[in-house]
Image: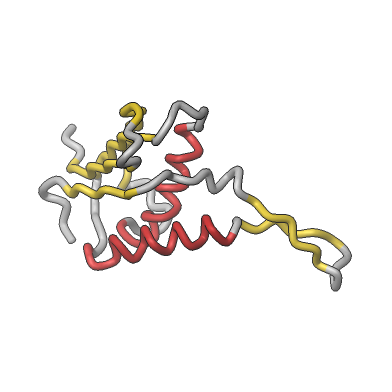
Length: 128
């Protein structure tokens, strides 16, 4: 899909930190442990992907602007939330790890919204 206009997405709920949600799984065969992403974070990622799967691929160059609204003032790392969002949508909307498409990212904290925590995402053409 050619990126000629803005694409707006809203991900409802708290954005989990994929980076900080690891589970230790023993690997008895190889006598070591493995780290995997927690199942609840994997479920969240699949839910996000199912919500954007019909939008097609975005070609670039584009910029992505994200505003995060959390339900409280609990300390959450915007960088980790950005990584979770990016990991969830990049394989669905963007060609995997193609730096020629997503060239500009802005993320900011929008404040507290106890009733409606969410991430508002705008993807738009990058004008030079």
